[in-house]
Image 1: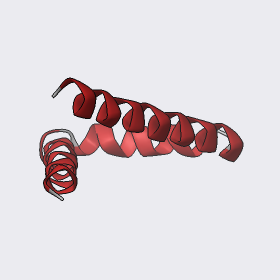
Image 2: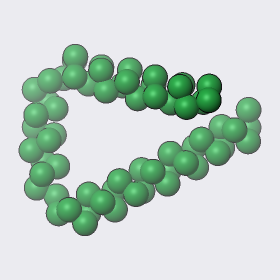
Image 3: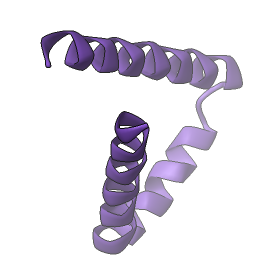
Image 4: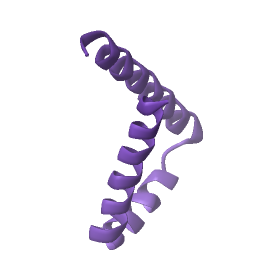
Length: 63
């Protein structure tokens, strides 16, 4: 449970920083993302999930 709360907290910190510090750049990034085909976005998302699971597993194993 602690790990889940830590993960959610870190996501909120990073998302909040992007919104607070780079709001104009975020709009450009969203426009760029909409130009990427849906299947490619899905593949990037699945890759990010796999990498995240790997990092969580690695953190659990090392720590």
